[in-house]
Length: 308
Image (cartoon, rainbow, N blue to C red; front, side, top):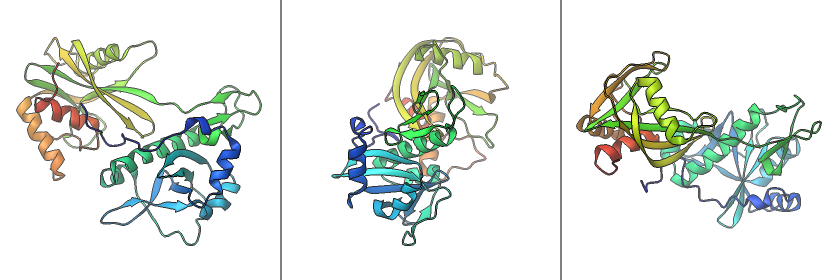
């Protein structure tokens, strides 16, 4: 799978070696060419409605918020300038900022692929900071360090780093049929690939087999990696697979799924087309929109582009 999916393809050079250089960070924050992306309640500031775009603003408009301690993240270098993100939640916005707040799920499909990937980076990091204000080792308040990429405890000196949770997402196939499930917490008739978090001490292939068996009772053999997608809700890496189903009788785990079904390749191809059109009827059996890697796993398999 060579496609770049939503939230992938970040064009910035993350320049991770610069994060701990306080003098350099201070220098670029004083550079009028530096740009900053503000998010409030994890929603980014945007401009435009018919063709929305991230609202990259001159950094000087945000110096008061930076000086007052708002969470600031160095995202990377691009177009000859440094790019930052700032948590504007609870902050007074500069008076000359004219912007709109848009939910990331709604915005991502409408903006450029690279911008959506930068947004995923910013949202995931800001969400992590909001959830990790206290040291997991001693409970003391932590401080932001390394330009937003570390939180350090001043008491026990522990360092805490952003985490990405690996999630396997797979289409189990049996001949010309693919296994899809409907989440019990999701209203309507939306089906998707089965998915689950990788557990400690487990390979990705083992996680695929375990999750399919736990959720549907289906046992799998061969597993083939396809592609991965960052998923900033809050910070996961969706790792896509095809899996060879060795059995066909479904036994659903009611704690996980409302139902699971085998769908013929032709049915999945039709569902993909409806989801891609954006005019899917929620009362009909459907698939996720193209924002999700599940859509593309189903699309590529149903069109014969990927096979075990």
